[in-house]
Amino acid sequence: MSTTTATTIASGTDDCTRAEVAAVCCSDLFRGSGEMLASTAGTVPAIGVRLARLTHARRLLLSDGEATLFADTPAIDEPFREPEAALPYSRLFDLIAGGRRHVVMGAAQLDRFGNQNLSAIGDRDHPHRQLLGARAAATNTVNHPVSYWVPRHSPRVFVERVDVVTGIGADRARLAGRGASRHRLHRVVTDLAVLDFSGPDGTMSLVSTHPGVAVTDVVAATGFELHLPAEVHTTRLPDPEELRIIRSVLDPQRLRDREVTTV
Image (cartoon, rainbow, N blue to C red; front, side):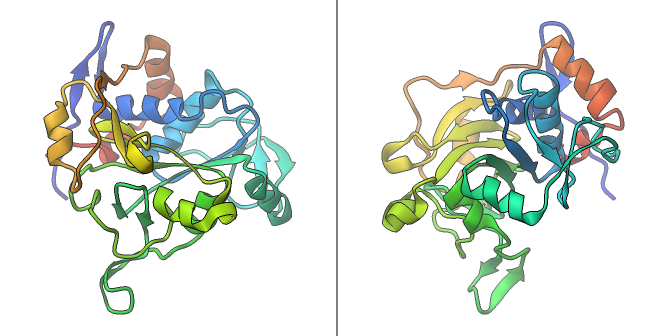
């Protein structure tokens, strides 16, 4: 296994890593959510949603992904222990259909409109690489808020055209009409930046670059013409309490630095 080193960023009160900045970005995805089921894929989003629940979004619902909601907020490598309510599939589907779920998904490919590919690289019927498959991506994107987490921002992920569409973007949502009336792509968090879909016709736009990352770095790592607003902010740093929770409560084993690294 190759050795990697976490990127360290100087903050006003402490040094923080790029992974910790990204975790706070994922936490901020859930601001103002209220009582909503939060589902995540990836280490950093798992830290982020738990951080949100312990700070600004205390009514978030967390599940083991099977059939139970839990009242406790453990470290990401520890099991939930305090059952709060049953969450059978019938209730889960009610939450999905009612728009009361926010999923942070991964993506092998994303295009400018937010079309996602989780299925295959190359021709769908004869792919160069077979991936996870569509899973529930299409259902997610037409029913409730969806964000994306990309731990390595590169032109291989951010492509002009995805090979297979699993989650639908703004262009396909418009074609679907009422069938995608709840379609809402919220944000994309990467190891370099935060992006949203406020560009022309619902295209991807740069919101902020993480400390130490230039706008040109993000543009070079994106395989399509990224919309650049008049003002691009610098992503906020974690405050001291957020750093304490991340380091001491949610991820004392520093699993986050295995997901966001620099060679």
